Amino acid sequence: MIKHKDHFHGSDLETIERVYGIKKELITSFSANVNPLGISPVLRQTLAEKIDAITTYPDREYTSLRKCIADYVKTDFENIIVGNGSTELISLFIQIKHPKKALILGPTYSEYEREISLGKGTALYYPLREEDAFALDTDDFITHLKDDIDLLILCNPNNPTSSCISNKSMRKILDACMEHGIYTMIDETYVEFADHAEQIDAVPLTNDYSNLIILRGTSKFFAAPGLRLGYAITGNRDLIKAINTRKNPWTINSLAAIAGEIMFCDHAYIQKTKSLISSERLRLYELFDRQKDFKAYKPSANFMLVKILRPGLTAQDLFDRAIREGMMIRDCSTFPFLQGSFIRFCFMSPEMNDKLMACLFR
Image (tube, rainbow, N blue to C red; front, side):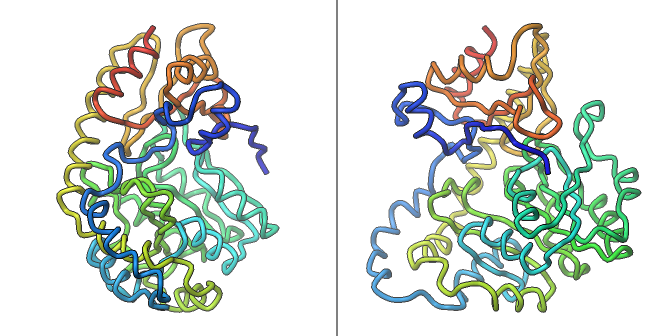
């Protein structure tokens, strides 16, 4: 198991406050990858009116919520499972499948490896290559799929590289996985931020592949990490039954269930988010692309991976410089295969993005 050294996660503002002596309220987190618009205005206006919902248990089946999610992702509501954040569903799925050997596309989110190791399984990494701009070589990747692998884990778009796998390539991967008896888990936490998301979105593939489960949540796109509302999509009804049998009842509180129904229907907010991220993603990528001290990798999600080229300047140096000006970026040294010279930051408002660029380009 790869050892991850201590680092500051995007949610660790209390730790930053203690270490740097900066009040957390004064810190803008470019590390958490959360929608800069904040929560849906419709949700803000209407949720308080629903406070009496906490006086009763939520629907044990969450039928209304699942139907709203199904409409949002364009699938049958019977294909939807909801959970207390996508982390609960990752844990439940891995407990049920109990893989002895899993292959993970890396560098990526460390929670996958952690859950596998808790189940006494072994996690192997297939590294995305810097010389390929962290884009997946699908044909080479497929040659690494073997009969002794139980589970494949893909984050798409991937964190922290912001690269993505197209539907066409994903079909090739899933076909190979079917041949080798490999179950595939795709984490689509960031897919809603992508331009032409329909070319990445794997939900339609759940109609054709029984070895597929897709995970999503509301923490990033809907700026609601404290809501702890996640969901999974799969066409495998036996898997749904197994997860629901093991899952504790009422893991989503009444207000979170209502909030989900509201936010998935706020089309104006959804479109405004997509427009903001799309324009800032292009603007900042082009800005970095003109810098001799940095190399930016073309992003698909709401964040960008950047390599520092200036001699003597490290990711820790830039993290320290930015945090002292009230901005938190991600030092990517803790990700496998990204030691020393990579940073990641998400796209915020144009004004805050300009402030961060002025800090980094000094």
